[in-house]
Length: 414
Image (cartoon, rainbow, N blue to C red; front, side, top):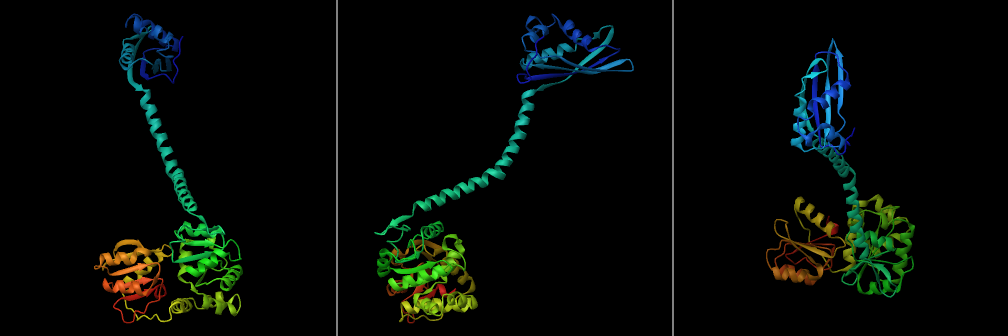
């Protein structure tokens, strides 16, 4: 007798049976085959259908109680839905099994594919949950890795000493000198592209040459080795500013916030030299003892040392404007970019500082403030005054604004 594979079954006929008497399972199976023989024609003969595998094994489950027998009949089918329905209906013509009256009623024809679809849906829900919980964070990590790789690709070898550097060394008026390649990579990761590495504690000729042409900030580790690098640079090149990573940390491992905080708190090389003459730990100890007062003094000293004639009047602004200006100047650190703002502190545009004067001239009016990663000089101050700009917010200033209608704010004011 043939048996249909559960995998190939498309429908399952479920029927109930009630018998007024006691019968055995083979009696029921025999009655099904015997009483439907010739009823449906040769194409739907149950024995032939089972032999060819189109009807599966007929399962009969019965239970006898109080002289009566009840149970169920299950028939798997790979026929189409119409043929399966005909076979199911044929079961109901059976009225006697053995000497007993019987009644068979088809309760349901189950579409196996619907059941499988339900299993597929439930399993798909589980897989989707796993995808959301596990795979998506991995995708974010991949995206971060790709973005980091792009920044790594931006690193180049600069000058005759082939020093690791960002792509904006030549176009920047200021550069940041760090110790090694890993420091440059970390700064690139956070959008600072004007860093160049010494590749050790000995200052290469390329750094000396850059010191003659550009404003140089030494950004060193927060340890004794950082102090040694500062001393070396002071002796062999024209160093302008000094910035240090937090105590005990290296530039290559600090976060974006720590990078910006360190660069905002940079001091002049002269100030660093005075502090270091008292011992390698004086600089750190004094900054830790009076961080707010020292930072203001250092930033002010940086501006005055670079431009002894520069002076600025006290500027009064609202706390809301001050907070917005502070946030913007922090975003621009190391980018060599500028924000042009309207009177509602909305950003009208962002331009490189090399094109800032031209952009202000072309707009001429409607500019409330300009925030940029650079130094206010006389030329820019004159252009801003002609365009009736109210505020210039920059890293420092070397132009005398005491007689100008333009108010200048530097990083030390925040």
